[in-house]
Image 1: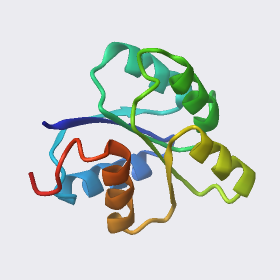
Image 2: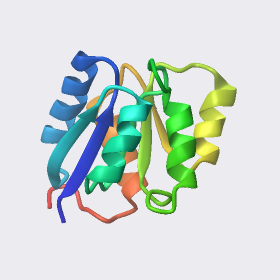
Image 3: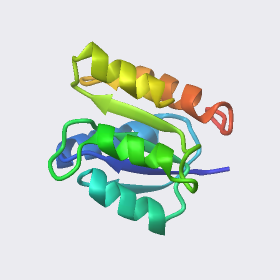
Image 4: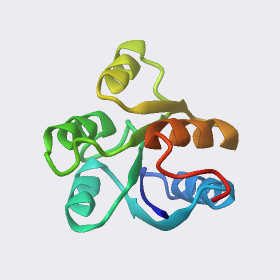
Length: 130
């Protein structure tokens, strides 16, 4: 099963880095969609078939933490695997991410750390190298 992934980050460069990492991950990646902020991410989640969201926390319009809370409140997306990829250093905010059943990877990241967090988030629904 190919994973359709939504990459949410206000930095075009970071979206490209994440997309490249997905491409070399060995994971069965289908389509990679992009959003510039949390509000746009919620719109795309309502429209698209997404299996995984990779979400920055610090963005304009709507930050990732608010978007994650709304994802968890929505019956359609409550179980969506989410990995937060952020420079965030606030332990209370990172703990809140974990309380909302999302993984956390700090930027800058090694590709292996992002892939590991994705594998944990998807819980074996896809296999590396599949």
